[in-house]
Length: 347
Image (cartoon, rainbow, N blue to C red):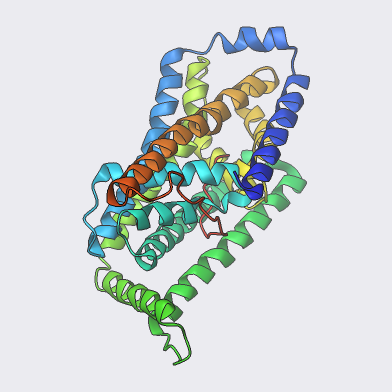
């Protein structure tokens, strides 16, 4: 394990410990455990099902995009890429490692890095666009939640929104420029081939604009599944009175507020903002266990699940490498993580 990943895991562990300490200070442990035992298990299962839908929608987007680029990948392969992205995003600051990890595993299945990058850029643009529109709509239609967030947390919303607009605009501009760029003679041949493949892929997608509504629709379903996890927890506590849109809209605002912060999985910040926002629906007595259950479903449990699936994907890559060349070292070179556009917000 290289130094960067050791630092990422150490930071994540420290944040988790600090978050647990902060949450446990809000309520005695005995009372907290008693409240947690009252949650109906069926709604926990519903929350996990929503998270599988979240990952599955992204996988379907990848399958559609890669198919248009000439790569007929099985859905299970695309699921593997998405779970790997979820896992690596969760353990790297600002979720910067998820996309490079997915591109790495795509390349091992014969997908050119240029096409893998284009796939992830298109998904990132759809994700950022729907996230911003969801949060903007919630901000204007849920004044009571906006008031609950307060001035300081409102600044977080402004920061998250500005970063998302700039990032999305930058991704779109990058795509346009790559489609038009003319390489100079001094550019290395390998880079030339990659850029040509990227440009050809961009032209292919521009010729298939009918795919865009399907991608936006899947992204809307993806984010709705993620944002609906607190509503499943709300029902699990036997509460009523709040609507699905109120809960989903509140989570959209929480996610926008913390999604651009340089923290692995937004650990600590997501819980803190959620405590303020969801007190409006759960009340002061239930909001701490509710946030713990919701984050346990949408982040911590899926961190373990996605980690195990990523390990299986990695071992599969190693087995195929050994089958092609028995002299291949038994250890696959570690993925070099670079900053990526999309942030998997798990608020």
